[in-house]
Image 1: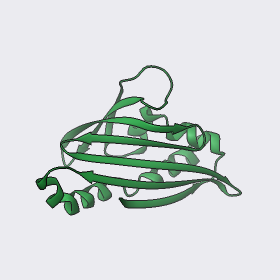
Image 2 (image 1 turned 45 degrees about the vertical axis):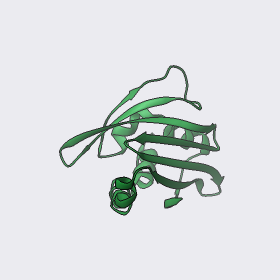
Image 3 (image 1 turned 120 degrees about the vertical axis):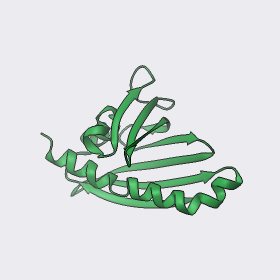
Image 4 (image 1 turned 30 degrees about the vertical axis):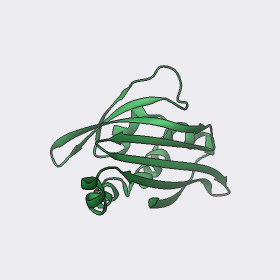
Length: 146
């Protein structure tokens, strides 16, 4: 079930936007809380591609393994992170428009275990706070680069 939906239009061609959005190694340059990305897969990004993302939140480092679960070049991709009974899935669709490239984003959170189910409203708020501006950060990065 979606808990976060966003749309942004970036004034750049679709291929450029998709390539930048799926270059996970530059996340620390785009997102304030992402401090490191370690690639765990070889080759180009595709379904099954994995990387470890490290975020610093309130002075503490949190690591998560993220896997690409769907990948259709220049159209869409999805990623999933699962740990401690929290299953977080982010879906991105890319559409060329007369203004540039529109990205439609949807975030889903699934929980396992009584504690996580009870904490889901709080967990949702924390994730929204961390990622609510991630598309705006991506837009600014892409539009001000080159």
